[in-house]
Length: 281
Image (tube, rainbow, N blue to C red):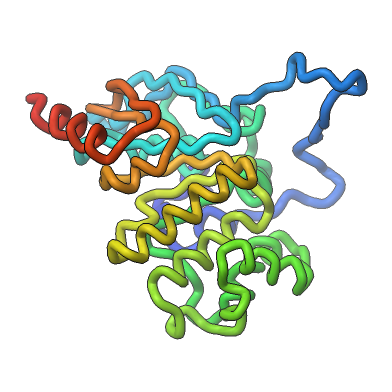
C-alpha cells in the first residue's frame, strides 16, 4: 500500500488506513514543566525543512523552509501550479515528499510507518477539503463521529453535539448532507476535522465552492477558532479576501517561497498576487 494518499480529494481517504493496534502508543503529550516554566517548550506547530516534491521532471516544491507557529492562522497563495496544494498535502501527511522533512506537533512524519501516520492524522491533524467530502448516507452527527468510529472508538453523543455546537449546527445533527446548504455542509466537515482537537487544521480552498456570503461565515468561524481557542490553521486559497482573515499570507512561485505579508488586507494581497502573476516563467 502506498504511503501517499494518491487522491487527497477522495472522501475520507486520509483516514482509512489501518489503525495502530492497542497497546502501542505513538504520542506522549507533556504539559508544562513541574517548575511552571515554559523554557524548552516549542511554539511551532509545523516545521518544514528543505522540502522537495518532484513528479517526474516537474518540481512542485523546490526546497521549502517554513515554520507555522502554534495558535496562528496562515494563508498560502500563489499562481496556478505554484505548489500550494502540494505543500498542504505534504505538511498534512497526505503525500510523501521526495526529500526534506515535515514535523507536526513535534513529530517528524518521514519516520512514521503507515499505521502510525494514520493515527497521527486521526488524532493530531484536521483536514477540510473544498468538496466537503461528507458521506451522503450519514447524518451530520454520524459524519462528525466517523473518524473515531474508523479508529474503533465510540464517541459520546454529548461530544458530537458539542462539536456541532462549535460550528453553530447543533440543531442540524439529524440532517443528511442533501438536507443542508453548502455552507452548512462545510461547517459539518469543519466540525469533523476539529472533533479530535487537532494540533493543526489544514484547509484546501475551504470556501472555493461557496457563495460570497456563505464564504464569509466560514472564514469568520475559522478566524474565531484561532482567536478563541488557539487553533493553528493553515489554509490554501486563491481569494485575497479569504487570505485577509489570516495573520499572515505566504506566497509560493514555482515551488518556492516568494515572500509573505503579515496583518494582510485584501487590497495588499491582491496587489501582491498581481505582481506574482505578472512575473514571467
